[in-house]
Length: 112
Image 1 (cartoon, helix red, strand yellow):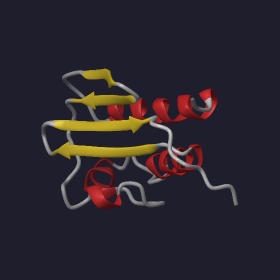
Image 2 (cartoon, one colour; image 1 turned 180 degrees about the vertical axis):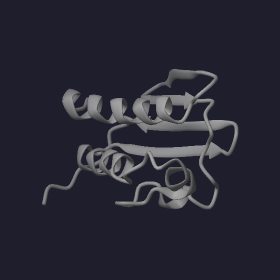
Image 3 (spheres, one colour; image 1 turned 120 degrees about the vertical axis):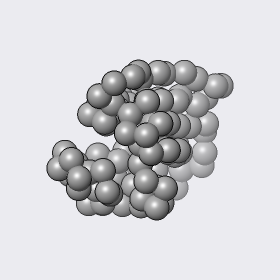
Image 4 (spheres, helix red, strand yellow; image 1 turned 45 degrees about the horizontal axis):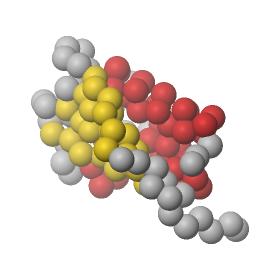
């Protein structure tokens, strides 16, 4: 169970990134229980950048190189999923692509 509007925003943002950084190849959606995976065969993310991709304003090597990134998209995705009580994670290899996991497994939410 989740919020349809905000989950759709997150999925659209991840898909937008996949389209932006996949000049050739494919984008694939698949699921495993309550997890949705969005996998592309794009340019990938440097391993050293992966721990910071959800930080506000962080664009990483590829984003600075292509000048297409604002550093806000993944930050907003993480913020939204935190508020919804879901998890988001990313795996990537340069030149091979990126896989984003949207984990809709229910976790406890703390209201401020």
